[in-house]
Length: 73
Image 1 (cartoon, rainbow, N blue to C red):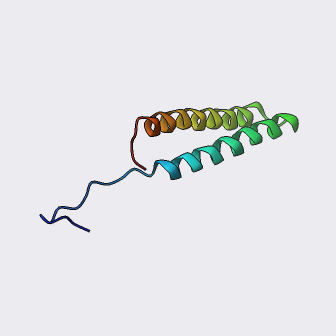
Image 2 (cartoon, rainbow, N blue to C red; image 1 turned 120 degrees about the horizontal axis):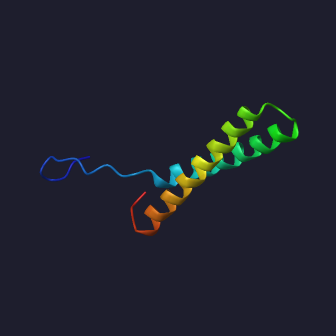
Image 3 (cartoon, one colour; image 1 turned 120 degrees about the vertical axis):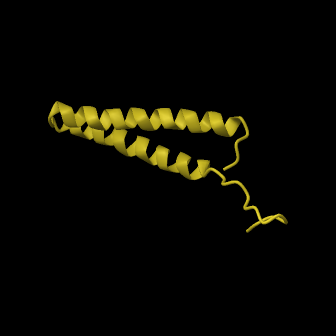
C-alpha cells in the first residue's frame, strides 16, 4: 500500500510478537535449566540454558520499555 505520492509507509515493529516469543523463550529456557540441574546433567548445558533465559529476560525489559514509550507494534 502506498500513499498519494507513491511512497510506501514506514515499516512497523512487531513488538507484541517479539514480546510473546521472548516470554516463551524465558519460560522454556528457565524450566530447562532447572530440569537439567535436577537431572544432574553437565554444568555447561545448565549454564547455556540459564544464559538463554537471561537473554530472554533482558529482551523482555527492552521490549517493555519501548512499548511504554509509545512505539507502535
